Length: 193
Image 1 (tube, helix red, strand yellow):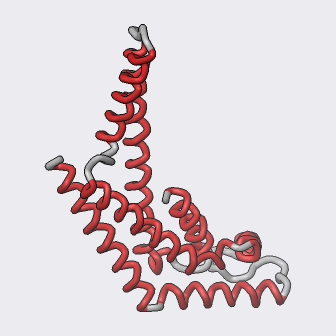
Image 2: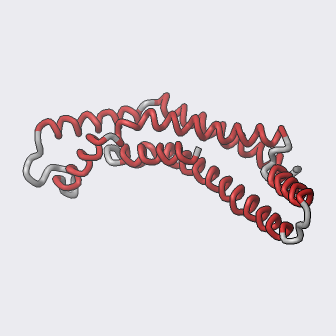
Image 3: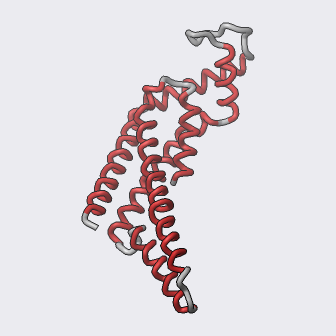
């Protein structure tokens, strides 16, 4: 999920070069909220669960005298990880997987809508735009190739169409509401766990 959201971030970065930031502010904020959730979850799983359980495992291994002790300590390590990962509670596991699934669906949706802006052509056009435009965005240096100007106009038109498309905004709002609902349910369930 993190990789997909980071890929969506890369596509967003390309789209931002061709349109006003305010046009896709909701997209950016929803993606960032989801990315924060996934990274926080990963941090918890790795640093708070596995790391602590591993230290306890290593400490317990110092007093091992038989193979049965090793197996018992290893089982205790796995049981601790499973319990702290909430893998032993089907309800929590379902809520967690649905939250992450919503993140994945949103990232794929955004990536599909904005991939064109992270293409090599778009990146090259954006770089040439920064070099050949003044403060007002008007050409100020030597004129670029007519093909480049035409392609830049097409990318800008595509970006503005995406930002102005009412269905796109509705879809992003739907993903935001779905994510917020699932995470709220997860947090409420974790309080009583």
